Amino acid sequence: MRVVPLVIAAILAVGLSWYVWASYGGKFGLLLVIGLFLGLALFHSRFGFTSAWRQLVAVGNGTGLRAHALLLGTAATLIALIAGTGTGLFGVTPKITANPIGLGLFAGAAIFAIGMQLGGACASGTLFAVGAGQSTIVLTLGGFIAGSVLYTWAYPIFTGWPQVSGFLLADHVGWWGSWAITIAVLLGIVVVTRVIQARRTPPPLGSVPTARGFARVFRGSWPLLVGAVVLAVLAAAVVLVSGGTWGVTFAFALWGAKLLQLLGLHPETWEFWQTSSNAKSLASPIWTDKTSLTDIGIIVGAAVASAAAGAWKIRAEIPWRTAVAAVLGGILMGVGARLAGGCNIGAYLAGISTGSLHGWLWGVFALLGTWVGLKIRPLFGLGNPKPTDSVC
Image 1 (tube, helix red, strand yellow):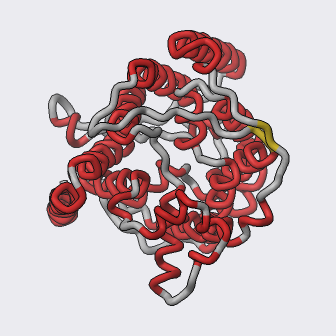
Image 2 (cartoon, one colour; image 1 turned 135 degrees about the horizontal axis):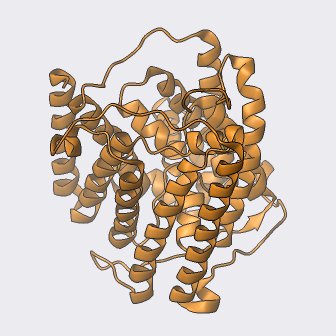
């Protein structure tokens, strides 16, 4: 246990929760608290999207992707219950929509996946790694924000790309029909990954140090499947409290725009920020933005979890090629997430768990991008899993 970081992180967690709850109301305060628990769960389970796809594509280890299937299936079950019954807290009604399907989705997902293989983390992974004191990923987050701002500045270039309206299963077969189809496909993925793994016999996943007994709850680490279930429950809680699905990356564009305003620039004149919903977000405090609240909560929650586990430590020495890869990867993820309308959380998790076709397509093109990213990683001195490794 690292006492000083733990005390600081705990004070931040309690203080921010109290401030938001007292100043902006229970809805926003609860979203921040959900974010804190997301950070704790992400860190303690080391739940990865980047590593899961890398292990599958590089050596055929589908353990991580099967954990994704459990996360997606559990979230789909809970969200079907919430949306199907119209249940919500604080007077909200769940609003589940399908993102458009087109060139932006395909290109954005692939670009994002290349970026996460270079940057070393996905969107949610970037947040919890920053909270855990991983200095390389701080560079990734900086690039992520820069890439998001770059997209919003160049937004007119990306408008008008060919696309069709989204497809939501619940609109055609109802919420329980949507749930049944989603679960069936996820079970198929579990079977396919087991077949691939049996044929390629990849190295197993490396073990993570863990506490014993009840202390494991607070000091970690958790089994991957436990992390999947906890994250699914928390993702459903976001829907219950806010009426919308969990997302991560819109906040990066918002933070970048607000930083530019502090520097005397005027991103509010850009076309992206002149749409009604975006303009409202930019004009409002970040403490009323759902995505900002859960993102900040993840960072602080992961800081609490890593300090409690004795793992919080800033490492100042970063090889220059690793640093370049981190920044470049972050920029690619920032552009890719906005272009695709979401990341591994806002498009992949939210899309599949709500029965939207765009989530599945995002996953397919992210796998293609992962393959490209694995080819590029060695240029920056980054290794890939090999069949001869003792562990992944």
